[in-house]
Length: 141
Picture 1 (spheres, rainbow, N blue to C red):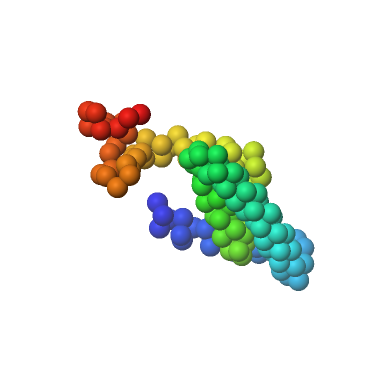
Picture 2: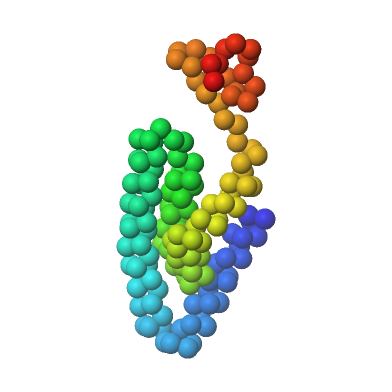
């Protein structure tokens, strides 16, 4: 699957770039790609700072920052996609920077990977126990 994507994405990107350059011209196409990258970098910075503030607020409130960590990853992924030259990856990157779309992707990720995550809790200097199956009398939850 990943190998197919690794081979297919550059071919699709080149095809789209060539089609856009036929319609707009080579210089205009390069200018558009550059403008999207600059706009994307600004948006990644803005969204990244927003996620960072929410992450800190969540930690300061004593809550597990699950959504904020996923959002941080998605903003980082959006930045990587925007740095990759091409219109298709830029479109996906820009979509990941739209908060409602990112929330939908975050919800999908939580549903898909939530069953694989095991939550553990460390006691003060003691062993680590699975909070879903603690030894009897060991955790005062």
